Image (tube, rainbow, N blue to C red; front, side, top):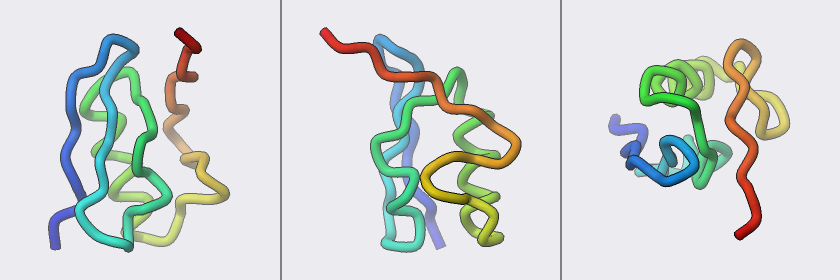
Length: 64
């Protein structure tokens, strides 16, 4: 099952969920694609808690 895609963003790398299973990650910005991959793996394992990864910390979005 596809988790989603990661797209380069001016603020980092943005995750777009491909299925409902990964909706908690949708729109999150990460420092690099590998962090997004780790977060998706954690979500698949049920380790993603309240929109915050256990091991990986998303980059905070900046207001424009």
